[in-house]
Length: 433
Image 1 (cartoon, helix red, strand yellow):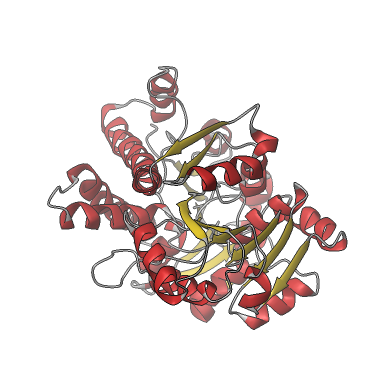
Image 2 (cartoon, helix red, strand yellow):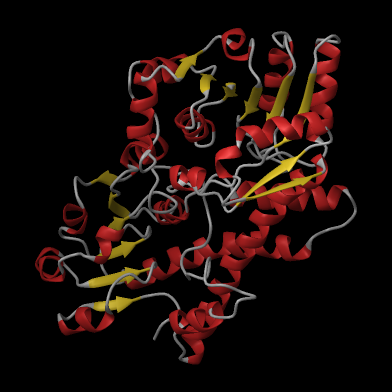
């Protein structure tokens, strides 16, 4: 099939590369000329494990191309995927659909043969109806169907998740469109459930799923607070909970709270929709407030450790919102650093992949280290904010020699307390005594 993809971000680019790898002809379009120029000339514009290799392979095979020309991407396409941003409104926190509707308006002009227009972006319930109206108004003779095709790609694991989906949800009110999508995803039919639901149900599934996972993260963080007071170990508690098949072990890692491009905006959007429909979702509202509070609590714990040290140097390991990605949007690490900077903190940070994106956000407000040991050099306290595997394998003897004061605050529970205390470190973790 010929596939047009509008948007080349953390959803559009991995999806485009994946569909090309399945043998489709994929044209990705984006308004950002510099980004498209980079992609045309062999430079991947974001980090995802395994993405670079598949991108280069399919570019060389001619199955994957990039353009700023909407007509080139849309004309003759069997399926058009809309994968543009839906950022939160700065005041109401509802999803901003301006990019979605702009894409729908522009693509309508170039629809020729029958086309399935699929919304990959996370959008409020009823957005598909509005996209359909926009296209009908702009191009009354167009033959098309609009469906919801929510993405469930985890940042950091997007390539893996594309080829190993745990489910494919298709929100379609058209049998013809459903058959097209079934053909597109035929390579996965023997190992993956393809669930066909109404368009509005599909739009709800994405929000309901992300909100539930966010609530699960917030819950285990509250249990971690309880464990610290009760003398229990949250790691052991989470393991015991996770063995219950009704609960499961995933998203039970206590830490600094949830972040990234999805959970914060999707919980806020879901809460907004609930209020607008007159059915407030109090669990989500509480989760949002608690997650915001969590970051401030973590910053206060850091400041409390260095309050007696003049001009204390704080070393930070981790800037991305989680390991496996360079994305710093709504990163708990960045939020915590922001709180520290309100107290004129002296910070040197390191992240294996996110130094560039973090620098775009923080500029010269902090110092940036070339490696994790440089970030710890002469530090009075070292704070772990992102769970990169290399941090768990740190040479503790080297750290002992580098740091001014041997204080480690491990907000990701990555290090071994006994090994640290034997070396004279003061060690603080989350939900453990």
